[in-house]
Length: 445
Image (cartoon, rainbow, N blue to C red):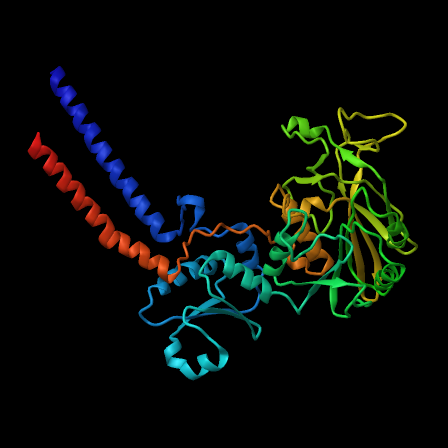
């Protein structure tokens, strides 16, 4: 009797489990048929768009078309379709068209269209690119979203950081990011051309090390007085001759270096590295969460002229101080000599101008945008956000500058031939020789 009860219990358990499995399977089938859910488990989430790309494609309000100039038998068509599908998931108005260049040979020749090229079209404007990657697609989209051609002019000739050169001190990496977002970047030597071009969107003074001539300072002052936008990167050793121009802009700097003890808690050996972790409410900083690292920064004091309004953008920690002594040996706070934090390291100055506003930004550091430090924390994102705000591209500010890393391997023709020869001939021959050696060794044993 006891055995029969056990047998019955096993049968009940068996049939209950079977019914539960069937029910669960049916539920899964129903869910997958009525819901679309994906999970990307690939390395670096390569099949998922980055937040920057999602924000960029979501900001498009007009029909967008991408034309891929590929032959009908090109295997790249699948790769293009997969890439565009990622964007279509966030923007149904995106349309993909495949065109065989051979079918439009005359048009392709006249417009310089090449096989493998892609073209984005928005509001009658087009941007071409050749790499089938998220970075290339999103950067082309960002260039299309700009209303017009915008020039960033970097003053040169006084030891400024250059957007062209690649030294550690220079800002060529940052300039490359800005070019990718559609800005035009050029240098201007006021000693050679004593006028700022009328189509300048933003004038950049990137840490001048030498004195400006009186005429050069006057040209910059006139540019500001006439409503031009300005970004000024200031260093502790700023030439004294620029103090008069700084007063016209609306600030003065302390000839001191910011020391931040917070770096000790972060295991950073350099105490002259200010760490910015909190940002005030400001259109250029909305959504910025990554810390900004500013080496050898100098404090700023707002002195806005009549009609201007100054807003602190960046503040050091309360434990930081402005060190006026030599940066050697053990550096400590000297009461009555040094200035205790929080210290202002970034200023935004604004005033009404016509139907809009004129904006100036002064930062007490240029190192954080240099080729050496731009990859740290939120340095790159902060620098690009400020440019977008100054250039009145508020709709682009929230689009991050760091896109998903490329995972495609681009090989030249000869590299492909070397790899093909290696896999087709070298490796099989190596296996054959190895097998022959093993056989010969065993025969002798």
